[in-house]
Length: 406
Image (cartoon, rainbow, N blue to C red; front, side, top):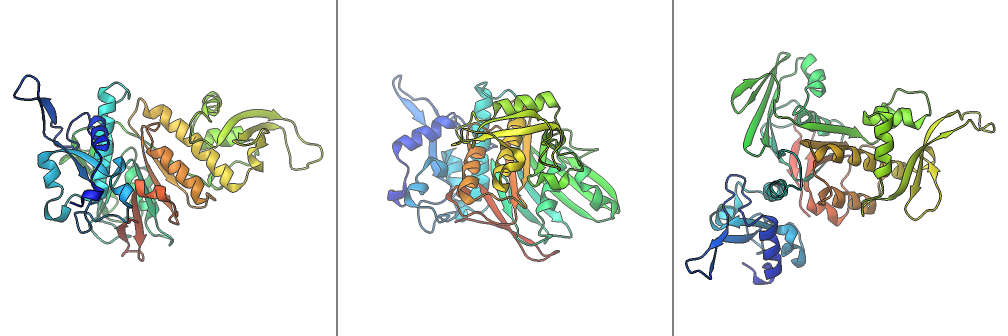
């Protein structure tokens, strides 16, 4: 090991504490600290392992991380001595950085539940293995972290297909087009609940068969809510009215009272770019032929002391507000219900600094759900290093899923 990249003693203590002094491997949970042989001693069998290697040619490489990043808490994985050695055996084969980051966050969530800080059963989407599909090369796998970012710049690069497969955890609706066109495909979703469960879906000649841990099931019986949104929402709403309340309740699938309550909660996070947002009834402007009576969304952005109508915001500002609204809705459920958020950024106008802020928000302790984000481009910001990051490359039928490290 390169000593200059080793963890500081304080970092090791924090890693161990966040893991509840248990091994973070999902099949272990060994308590790594306890009574020693003497009445005044402690026995420790835990180690702070590196996710990206401390040494230049070590397991999983260094991910282009700086010295400080290599020895930071974000790059640490608390494990018993057996698993600390195992994950580095054979150059780390079978234990990718994406997998270790996922296990770490899963284990920390489990500790929160044991402390009563999250009032729900544990759920984690660990991986998706696409066995056969007309878009991808066979037998490709994605490991999911608390935040997973997937980009593909070409049309039909497979972003929507991946989201459709994930969505089948809760509903088969997004598969209907493929099923009705008699396409054949199969994939496995590994779900931790907290035990490892494998949900297998196989479609052939318009017939769907699914299994949970090799037992036939009509659908996934594990209780999970999946929320899916496209931030270019106006394109998908068949509403002629300019009334914001009508559009937003349909987009978020909530009623007027819920919308009002969600808006009241915006701005409380340190990551928020909103000071206040509210619905206000506005009468038709006689000087504007296109205006009409209606309930309009008014927004005060941080740094401003005046409100703007939603329609007056820039594309990036509208995307910011929608993302914060979505997050508030999902977080309300996630405290009590196993939840995932799927977001497509296809045509938004985020700059990289703003996007990095929201990546850090989704990775923070404020958020109790996993997030999967798809986009047509990769952002240029340091925050992307915190995510499980994938690039879709190639043409239809030959698309390859590459894990990306900076």
